[in-house]
Image 1 (cartoon, rainbow, N blue to C red):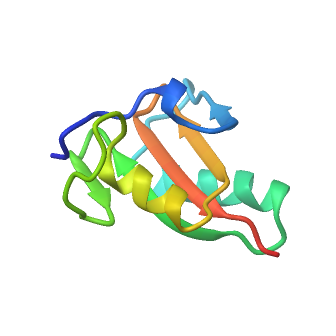
Image 2 (spheres, helix red, strand yellow):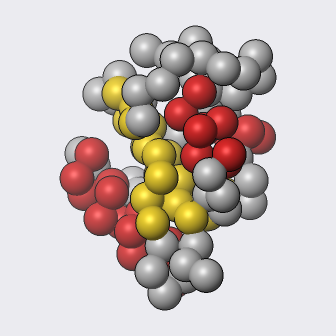
Length: 99
């Protein structure tokens, strides 16, 4: 796992999604995040993601910041401006809006 866990205050204007009525896995969470991102942009590009339950994230980059996880720094440095936070950071998906 990366050097830091993500917290909501690290995310820029997160879209907060809470799903209590059904269990989520990575694929169902991603589908939900994709739909939410498309509400904000015609063709959002997924730049990074975090799966707390699976203990995974992408891209798998080495720590490069003291305050945020490296995958989030990577996304922000590439212009990502939409973050979808599902179930209190169980899943986080970060997108770059279409221009």
